[in-house]
Length: 323
Image (tube, rainbow, N blue to C red):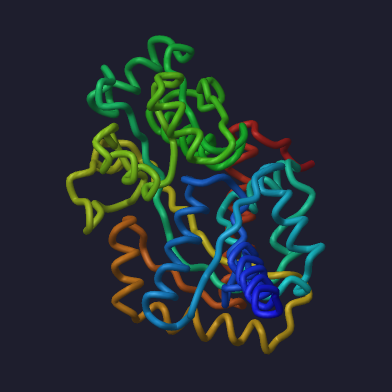
């Protein structure tokens, strides 16, 4: 009987360890959106690189949708460092949504740890779409803006919307007339495209590649300034004659009260990751560019982007012009 109870206790303890999202992990990644989006892909790619390269023993992941990313940010702020090592992935939307007032937080409420990658915007259609080229899309929008429903994995006025509005503006179309359909994260936006709810998907290149490589969709154009070395056959808007380019950084943030020694540990691991073949495999697979910036340089980039995006958002009518 004692042996049986001891065995029961051992099994129960093991089940608790396995079911806990952080018990087996050296680093826990908090993802502010649902599965299948750009944040999800980035967090899991970084975790994969860290573990496969031997820099980390384990990594775990937690998706927390809601409030345009605000729910996850609030959780990180409130949890502090009490729940162990937590890194939240985020990107340009943390700047956009703060500017628009859609979230009550900004990057200043957190500890920016490092930017990791740059991901371009991409425009995707189903394989059976009548749109064979980006020019076909522009022609239809010019004839009837309401005829083309454009999906994005973020709210109106946020990044997927902003990139699509800038792209059509480069073709002489008022970006405010774009018929944009918001979804909660990239996975649902891709499902909307594949189900036929929308005609076009505005998303990040890594998400676009995922659905295109699955044989269900085609990428019409990307927002890089030059052809992509890993995917040279995908047209850029610039190569098609449209003066528009856009790059979205993705990086990692920690709690606002992060101890300096913990920041140094994170930075060291992420710096080591950059030179590993395991990270290069993740980067190339997703069509990312390396954009590693440690805390101080990262903050300078965030401040500069905030100024630039405010001007673009005011021009497109997404936010009011400051007096």
